[in-house]
Length: 200
Image 1 (cartoon, rainbow, N blue to C red):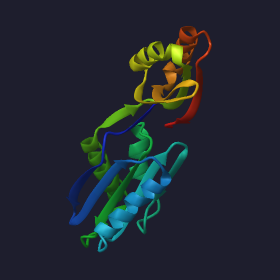
Image 2: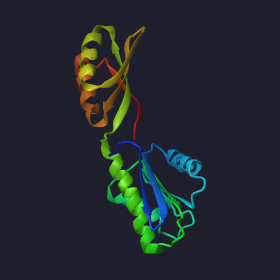
Image 3: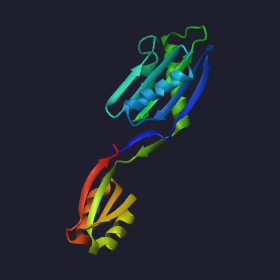
Image 4: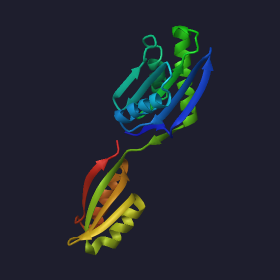
C-alpha cells in the first residue's frame, strides 16, 4: 500500500518555561532505524533530562516517556504521527529540564507541539509500492522488450546469458500486471517475469 512519510530528516527547537525541547524526526525503514535515531539523540544530548521516542513502522508502533509522567511525552508525539497519517517514521524529543514543572497538560503540549513543528519542517511525500522484477526474454525479442521496459520501468540493469536477455527492473506494483501482459504479447509468451523483492 502507498504510504505518507516525512520527506527527509528535520529538527525543531523550542524553549518553554525555561525547559529546552529539541525534536528530531526522520523517515525510517525499520524499527531498528527508529532506535538508531534515539541512540543518536542520546549521544548528541547526553546531559538532557529526557529522550522521548515515538515511531510507526507498518503495524508496529511504540512510544517512550523516558521518565516523564506516563503518557505525557511519547504518546503526544505518536499522536502527531497518527493524526498526520504518517508511516515509517520516527521522532525523538529531547528535554533539558529548566527547573520549572510544566504539569501533564503542559508536557503534552510541549512534546506534541515540538514534534509537530519538526514534522512541519520535514514536509511529507507519498511513497508508492514498487517491485523489483527479473525479466527474461529470447534474443529475437530483445529490442521490443527493451523498448517496453524503457517506458514502464526504472533502474534497469541488463545482461545476457545463453538463452537471451536478463533484465532486472523496478516497477510500480500497480503497473506490474499490465507490463507482464504486454511482454507476453510481444514475445508470444516466451518472456518470463519473476518478482525479486518489493519495497514495502
